[in-house]
Picture (cartoon, rainbow, N blue to C red):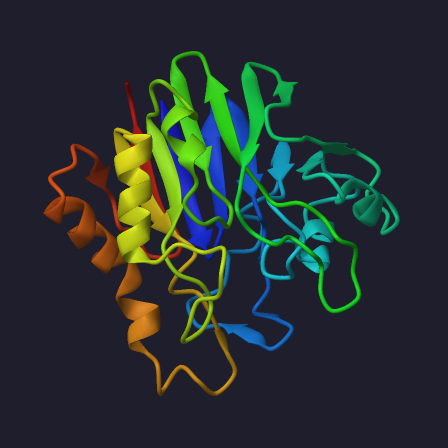
Length: 251
C-alpha cells in the first residue's frame, strides 16, 4: 500500500515502501509576502520524515524555518547549487542530484529529473538548478514535478508511472514562465501517462490582500485540470484533493 497526504502547495508526504518522503516542505502560515489561506498543517504531521526532496530554492519550495522544524538534521536531497546553500545554513545531511542521478533510501530509489524552471534563490541567493524527482519502490513509481514547464523528455521519464503529482497553478493571479496551468498540465499527463494524478501547487498560498479579488485562482485550477484531462479522453484517474487530503492505492 502506498499513500500520500497533500499538505498544500508543493508539499506532499508520501509513504512508499515504508519510507516517508516529504516534498518541498512549506509548513508555516506565511512565507515572505504569501500567506496560507487554508487550515494550517497539523503540528507533527511531518515528524519522522525519512527523506526530504527539494525541487528548487524558491522560498515557496525551500522554506528554511519549515526545514528546521523537521528535526535537528533531516536527510535532504537538493538540486545542483542547493547543497552549499543548505549546508551553510546548518543542514549537514544534504545530497545533490543532477537529472539522471539517483539516491537510495532503504527500498526507495529517488532519481532527479529535468525541469524547465529558473531555480535561483531571490533576491540575493545563489543561482541553482530546478529538478523534479521520480520516487520508486518495488513496482510503484511516483513522479513529483516540482515546478516546470512542458519538456520533450517527459514522454521518456518512466515506462510505467503509477502516480504523477502535477503542478497546475502557482500562488498568485498570474503565472510566470516555467509553470504549468491546468491545460498544459493536462498535456503533461498525456505525455507521462500515469495511472493516477493529483494536482498540486494551487489553492494554498496567496499574496496578502489579493485573495478577495482573485478567489477563483484559489478554487478552480485543480478542478479545471481534472476537466482538461477528462476532455482529452486520457486514461488517467485524477484525484482532486483539498490541502490535508489523503489517498492510498494498491497496484
